[in-house]
Image 1: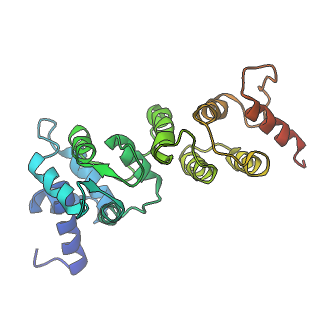
Image 2: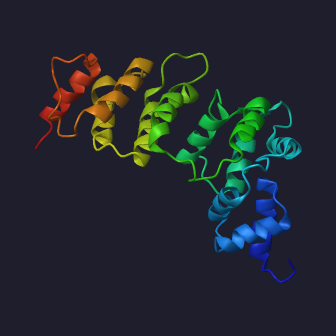
Image 3: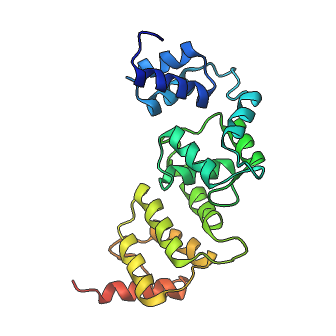
Length: 237
């Protein structure tokens, strides 16, 4: 690697550390992706033999220990931050929600040993952008986000948290009414969001046209969504 520049050498070491790949395989993947780290991960896992184990248990244990908190058997905020740095992903990026979904994480900004290692074993590797919001998984990720984001011991999701999660989720699968919905809740509701409201909003976003042309006022929508429709009708044209 002596012929590589410092930045390239750093990427090779980073790729080897995260993917558990050899130096040769790391170089091949990085060169194939023009030294784009995310592209290199996608190339590496797309082109390796199907029969090859996707994750060495010893490597996963080393990776877990790299991020584990000093005082508990968990990966906590500092470890999550280091994990994000290694992946070149912002902690607030939707990809961290998707990673947590793949891990089966119970709580935001926390990974248990089992969640982290089992998640990697079942998936092979979590690549930023590679597993984003594929259409057939969006509903699962959306439903997962409610329990993942709420405070421990609480049945409802704090309004500010819910608004942030909706904006994050619908940024990947755009829903034209997400901002009016958020404005409506802040102006008229201003309360924590129940799981039922969270679920019904998804169904509304997928089944009702943004012009409300197919909305049935006699339908079985919860009162909060009926009030939202009235709110939309009252907005200045």
